[in-house]
Image (tube, rainbow, N blue to C red; front, side, top):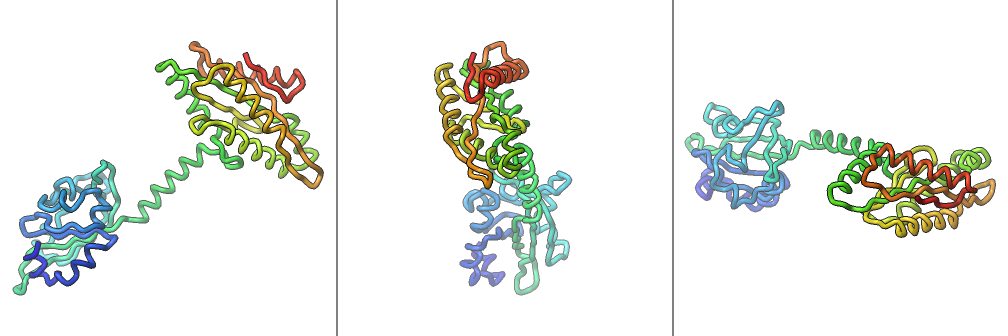
Length: 305
């Protein structure tokens, strides 16, 4: 590396290159990597000691183009420089040490001796933020597709996926699973008498109460309208009843101020322990029936079977 630095008049800039956010590597005439800065370590996951001494196309310098074609040979800047080019720029995907692909914009320049002969090449690669932004946006849209926008809880689709997964885990590992189905009492009356904005505040209050009243590994979801589904892992029937009663009391004790007065919402709850023969359809029908038992018995109560 020292010979390449000296011949290319790069030694004074080494301290700067060492600390660039962009990845910088030097490749000699034998297509060996002789320099690998901290930026390259961050972008690729390969340390300098892992990269230096390897050749173009080895793990640390392995790239593919957008169509998936391996560029192990063509991506080596020495090949381009020896054909007469002094500069190249291309968008590629580098293989990260963890296995995923990182979109980068790679620029290469030739390093020549005093006589003009190619002695190596410097390659600078920076993360292609426009492509990363697209990936991040897709991930965000996927996340939003599983979240209820009003309450911030999991939505019905997310709850259905989670419930099916938990049923499989329960059957495989013999875990106990409990489910609650809660409905806000007289919600139509709240909307009619106090307005939909106040109704939304009631939904948000209930959602926060459910979220704060369960454990971090349990799930609270807005099932639809004023209905909520809560999935609880590793609970006995007595524990399930205690949690349901706690949530019912917390909702009852909450208050929402509106121009039309103070609202003290209540909930009717159906609760059940999942049976070995249950599938999601039979389970949902049972807790829906139990919730309506609470409704017809006077509301603001828990019914458990």
